[in-house]
Image (cartoon, rainbow, N blue to C red; front, side):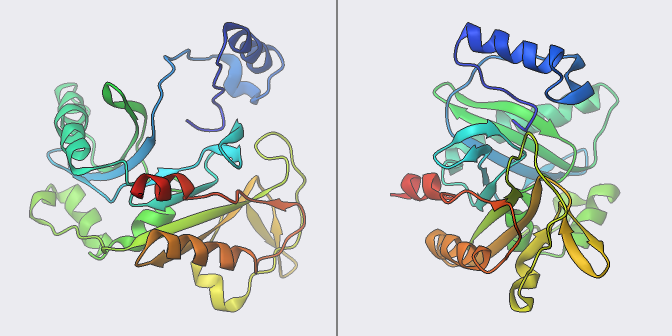
Length: 273
């Protein structure tokens, strides 16, 4: 569920959302058509996976934080932070997803003559009736990738080549037994309207942990140019350590009009208790 999604808890809220999207053009031309879906409840899980069209090899699971504000308040965004692995994605849930979602998806595409090879992203929700698909993406998801790939121990190029060659079943895909956390720093006002052009200062000693997105170089300076400006990722033995380390680095980065959530990973920590 990204920034083009409005969760309506009542019929009135749904009607207001339709007016804001289709009449007021809240999301621009992309709001010329809409999709109304069933409201599902439960923890969300993102599972990126490698596939060569025959087998599916899930990557380590992750948990995105879509809402703009702390305690899951505010509008939906493209993601304000992530942690991996996701504690809600247990072995039993993973088995059910493989049997009822992952393999059936691949088999259905093959049956239609649309064999897919590459990275297939499953956006899931663990409901009281089991895991349900919220969305698919035929790419690495952002900001999930910022916590998933840093934990990959196997060679990424080798895996990518295996997906195209159809040899994924014989290729090792191993992840580190560690935890990762990513905190997104955004421009105040995102995901609606925000100002751009503020200079970004990143200490050199943490630069390798920063994934820059909504920024541009101009006259030798790094300036904000988007809503989600950058993500800061930390890896540690425990989730708490990864979260603490990520926020410690965030506090060292400077740009005017910056904001970020202060509770990334808290739901995951509670689930581990």
